[in-house]
Image (cartoon, rainbow, N blue to C red):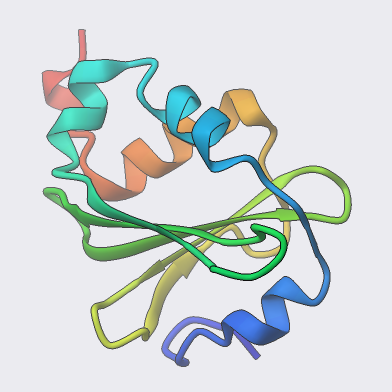
Length: 119
């Protein structure tokens, strides 16, 4: 489950996730403000349960238009899923998990970055 071309199953993913702090996560993503703005990110959403285990944002980048879902797995690493508006998974971190210093770059490469424009 939760493979490319399948509909994302948030309930299944959050069963093995840890709590996350959406305010700190958004601060981390906004650290490179202009690159973050280039994603066209808005529609920030969290699961409205007792504990926050899912963060979602809408993006309109050069490479990906749709949703970016971010979870914290049991190893305290980030799992990221890119989906279309209908929830179909187009890319994900494939269970590898990302450290916090890798998160922004992975999302930027998948959503917007064009290497010819980077100095």
